[in-house]
Length: 308
Image (cartoon, rainbow, N blue to C red; front, side):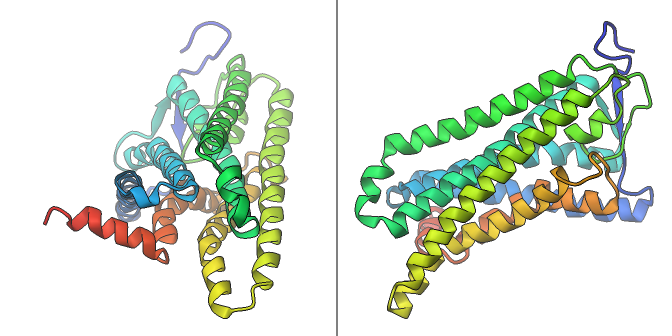
């Protein structure tokens, strides 16, 4: 039992996906595979871009930031999921708050980063003559700093709002990780301020960034349609289609999770959606961004086979 006015509960229980031993083994294999793919895939992206001077451009700079965020996301969520499938499914109060903070940080930062990446593609396609000036190294670093710091401040605020809450039981989190809406449901204290601030910040981050991203792509698509040659259209579209696929996957699942009427509910479908944007999307990002990118594939081959 905890002391002080923070909590009477020192340990939370994370709800398992299933109690069936065979299904637990199958899910362990599935999530372990996703973890390995996410870590190796995003790690290769970071190494290939770092070791290839021809990839030291704004587009790949933001891709490195996305890879780092994906690594942070999977490293925060999946190890505890794997542990709950084979051993105890408990998490300490401090560990739960830490997981809440890091995950919220990553989620908010990725939404902001998608807007920065969309803006980069807008400048590259719609204003190519001014691209070098408008997206200089200093601007890229400033945008990345804004993305990471704003995501951290948003997460810090929401986590700090949860610190004074009392948790006196029950201590079963109806989710497979500590997400703010699910944790707030267990509080014995009033959570009106927390609920309102969670909705406001999530709608602001999700809604505003979705609007900015879609606005950028509206201009991009309009610019592509004005290109006369089919080859030119294909080349222009290939530079942003991968990003558009990732944005669609991420926003559709995040919007459902955070702007649903039954705030904090975590039924089977809710968990499936959470799996999509916490584990599947970070694992798919390396494949989505590299499969159609000839420049990156050449650099990756050089990295992998240069010492053979």
